[in-house]
Structures are given as structure tokens and as C-alpha cells.
Image 1 (tube, rainbow, N blue to C red):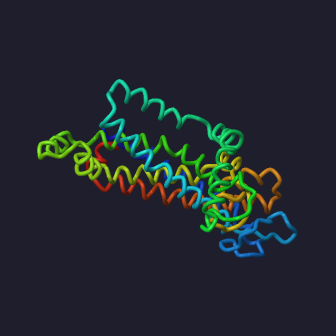
Image 2 (tube, rainbow, N blue to C red; image 1 turned 180 degrees about the vertical axis):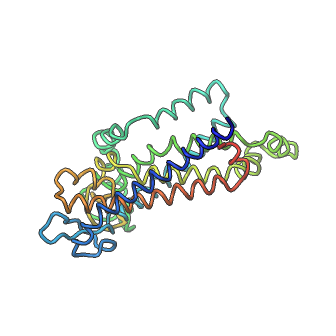
Image 3 (tube, rainbow, N blue to C red; image 1 turned 90 degrees about the vertical axis):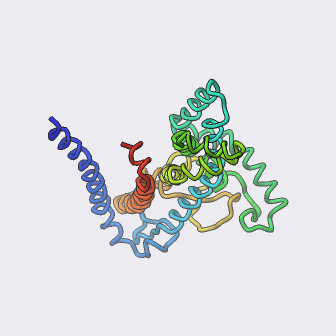
Amino acid sequence: MEAGFRGLTTAAGAMVLVIIVAIAVFLVSKAVPALQANTENFLTYKAWFPNDAEPKFGIAALAFGTVLTSVLALIVAVPIALGIALFLSHYAPRRLANPLGFVIDLLAAVPSVVFGLWGRDVFREPVQDLSVWLNKYFSWLPIFGGDGPFGRSIMLGSLVLAIMVLPIVTSLSREVFQQTPLMNEEAALALGATKWEMIRTAVVPYGKPGVIAAVMLGLGRALGETIALALTLGIVFNISFNLIQSGGNSIAANIANTFGEANATGRGALIASGLVLFAITLVVNMAARAIIYRRREFRDSAA
């Protein structure tokens, strides 16, 4: 029975690798014809015209927008998520921490199209007002420059994405902080540390690998987001660090917006861009797992 169960679990684990390889093979086989027909450099060209008689398309602007929106979302979400996680694990009374943690976890179950529609129809106006204010007083900074229009922008997409990433980072960080050995916390308090000093010297260092892994898993979630960004970005193929002018695009959003009108070469081009996104998210998730397994306590908890 033991040997049979071990063989069954090994086969299940190997099946995951087989599926990943099968996905990669499918993407490569479908992307190669379009890449051969492309008349521009796929990695450096910014525009996207795969349906023309002479196809011209590149991943540069899409990859830039994907990475920029994801990084900005993490910059906004991670400090808030860590603050919520520490509050729930060490400050809030249990009768408040449990319901509040449940509500935060529920955010992860909200469909991305709901976030996208809310961002486009409700959240867009306050972000637009904020963009106008930033442009008025801080236009000397390149990220807040320009003459408009403001609205569907990198800032709007990143803020909506930050809200979507928040529950993932919060939930994982809270679990890591709660795993801190009680003796470590009591030892710090016994030496005269305040509660914040105890958290800074005992809780945060212990949970650092887990927090890093949570952030990287949140990054993987942000990189692959589709509908929310398709509804909140300006869908412009350019490379610019301006956050408030209408513009921005991502790999996943471009696939959602252009797949319906694409011809055979266009679909191959979209699959090629999906291959790039697949590689990026695979690397991010593998790095996250590697960080988790660096320490024995996280390996044991994962098992």
C-alpha cells in the first residue's frame, strides 16, 4: 500500500511537468509560423500589425506595460498587505481578526471582470481627478507630465491591479507571521522589547522568506491579469513612464482585445506573445517556490 501510494503521488507530480511541457510545445508550434512571417524584430519592435499583408509586430511595448503595471501594483499593495497581515496576526483581537481575514480572503474570489468594470465605470473618475491634480502641481516630474487626456492610464490599471493582488499577499503573509515560534516572541519581550520591537526583531526576520514568496506569487498573479487591465488601460503601443496620460498596454490585455479580429498570422502572433508571458510567469513562480523551500520550517509547513 505504501509503495502504491508513493507511486501514485509521484505520477501525479510528474503529470504537472508533463502538462507544462505540453503547453510550451503547443505555444511554440503555433507561434513559429507567425514569427517566421514577421518582418520586424519580435523582441524590440513596439507596434502591433500582424494582420497586414507584410506582418509587423513586436513584444517590446507589451512586455514593458506588463512589467510596469505589475511592479507599480506591488509597490502599492505590498506595504498595505504587510500592515494588514501584522494587524490580523499580532494586534487585532481574535473576534475581529477572524471575520476581517475572511472578508479579505473573499476579495480573491471576486472575478477580475468585476474589478475591471468597477475600475472603468466607478474608480476611473477619482483617479482622473487625482491625475489632473498631480499634473497641475508635479508636471515637472516626467511620470506626471503631459497635457492629457487623463483617465484610462497606467495609474488606473496599476491601482485596480493592486487591489486584486492585495488579498493574496495579505493571506500568505498572515499565515507566515502566525507561524513564528512563540518562544521567539516571548524571548524578545522578556528582554524588554516593546511589541513593535518584538515584531521587528522576531516576527519579520522569521517570516522574511515567506513574505518574499508571497510577493512573488502576487507578482505572478499581476503579470497574468487580463480583463481588468483590458478595461482600464488606454491600449496604446508605446514605451513611456508617464503614469497619468491615457495609454499603456499589456500582453494579456492585448490578447483579449485583438484575438477576435486576428487572422491566422495574427493569432500566431498573439500565441507568441502568450509564450513570452508564459515564460515570465513560470520563472516568477519557480523563484517563489525556491524561496519557500530555502528554509526547513516552510518545507515542513508546505508538506
